[in-house]
Image (cartoon, rainbow, N blue to C red; front, top):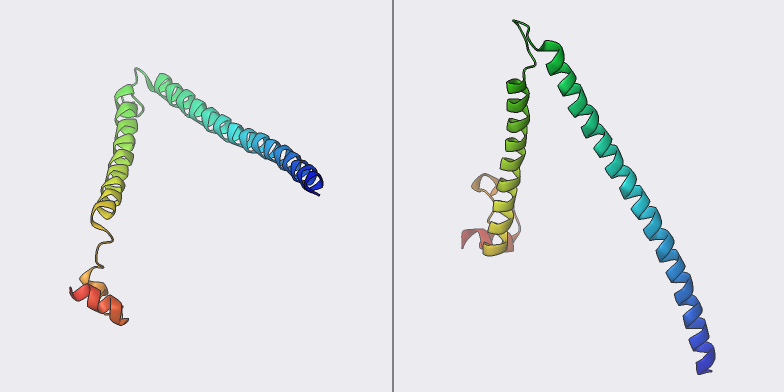
Length: 121
């Protein structure tokens, strides 16, 4: 009796192990493909930016200069960093202080007693 249960359990474990390996390989291959596509897109963007700078280099009315490209890329990164820091600040505030009360302009939306009493305290 116990031996048949152990054999059945180990056969189920073997099936689960094969399924897990297959799932891991598919998941890893998909993630590798996504990262490869992102890398290729970054390479094409960098190459095209350099091409635009080379074509406009030395012209009087050059639009794409190394300085302009540097400013555009830096401001984009700074904007993303600023948004990420704002999000992190809000998440840390919620973790430290609990859920903040809703804004006062939403007070008329809440009609449940517990929310109204919680809001007034």
